[in-house]
Length: 219
Ligand code: GRF
Image (cartoon, rainbow, N blue to C red; front, side):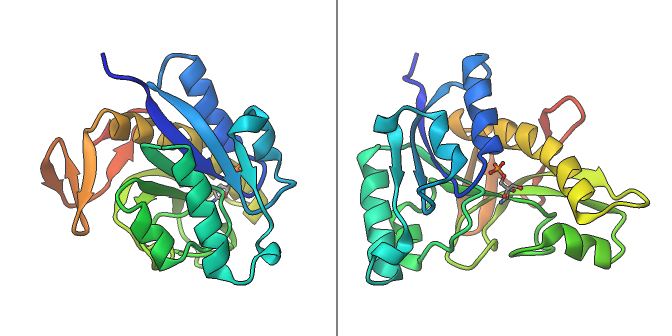
């Protein structure tokens, strides 16, 4: 049996996706360990989910520029020797050199049905557009914001009377199983990305995997 996959998590905030990863590992549902949690916000609650030796956090303002911060983040990340790096509520754009350094191992969870609503305020934008459905995507990270190959998506209905807050809460309930299922497939080597193409069980797939109501990914 191979060793559990080493997962590092980049987080800027509360860390509910990180908690979901830790819970799945503890429940024996994900063959992995969280080897490091890294943040651009030294006060981020997410950091407290792991022992101090597995944390790294620095404020970008303490660095000369974006490249210097990214280099320090990258060195710290490399020090944890991760197999996979998950951006889970990491609210800072990663520079091209950083992305290239960890290419193919870097995934992000984004609260929209990409390619819709890259960037911020996704829930308000889905409501303003009158969308009937909204959701979340797990995608490989490329230098362009939220533009990498989408691995898997989960959908929720938009309901009458929704506010950005109620919609965000509904999306969050599917983000957690979506992220866990995506990581299960990644650590099992079932899913990969090559030249912008999603490969599932070594075959090209032309639309993302979809989370079903049992929390499983389907073609
Ligand atoms: C999630 O909605 C994630 O999709 C977005 O930021 C939020 C982070 O939540 N990028 P948490 O910190 O994991 O609770």
